[in-house]
Image 1: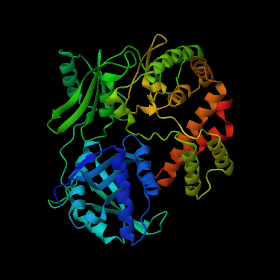
Image 2: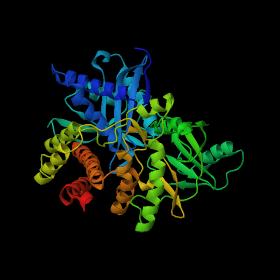
Image 3: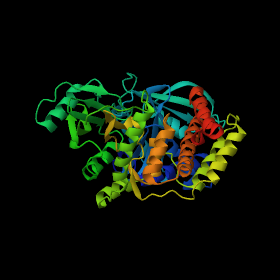
Length: 479
């Protein structure tokens, strides 16, 4: 086996390959003669990737072919700890060093993504896996306990990047990482290169997916080069987007640090501030005025005919947990019902979800450029006017309703729905039904993912159940 190269990915083909490997590896591990089909194996991997922007899929490539993978997410109660939910090597490559090379490379990628340690669970009756992890420096953490679904004894293992107990034969220590939230020097150097002058003071802005620094007339987004690739998507689209929709891209690329490379995008700063998710503190008249501007910008986006390069980028599938088809939503409800062994979701809620799904369109369009994340936290506004729509990292081919749903959601739902109905010549009833279906898809997916994870805090599950009950029982879209 040649040296394996490990890298993060979001490609659909790689997700399929990871799911295939997991199905084959678990069947071989358990002595099963039947291997789960892709339609059953893929949702396991996809659920991890859909759960949080910090989720990662790392693939081990040998001569360009996926031979192993790790699907990773942060521990819900400790964002500095990575949870390796699934890790597998295809059985045909067992005994050829792939697992060892994968485990040597994984810590560096996780450290670069901001994690300080990693945990995973392994069945104690799987000696091959136990030996592999222990040889790579992973240490038992806690007592073995029955797995909540299979009942087989499972033990947690932990790897700490700076744990002095790691020996030379274990995991390769990752390079030291830079704390990008504190390192204004990196952002200032990038901004100075883009502007050709000193950018002046720069402050840190809140972001769930990147490190963002804001100056008087420049904004810099940074992520470790080994992190997720959504900034690449935004950079690829930026030169092609219709004028006047978003902030101009001034520069992008890689910046070399002593500890490795970071990827960056440097934008001109647009006037205004974000109205905020849900438009807090905004009166109805202002909400209506902002919505009128936002609709016009989205019209320009939806009416844009992208060239071949941009269309290729938009066509790379990103699953947002949104509405895809009637059959997909019905399947989501069925999975939710099967997972809810404790009956925390009321029967009337499941029945209501099923009724919504049965009334949904048979298939959602996927041929219009959409932002797909245009909630009010991603807009800028000044003097009651919209100035820019930001963060195109989730942009894709979809249908306009995918954007109208995000725009209309919030306390000023009725006023904004009225604006969208008038501007699009769509009946309010149609908008309500389409938005309700998308809300059902998002919330059912959120709860299903929460129930699939035994370590999900009870508070999170309770909040998901409450939101779903409100949608189905109170029917807020029809008030």
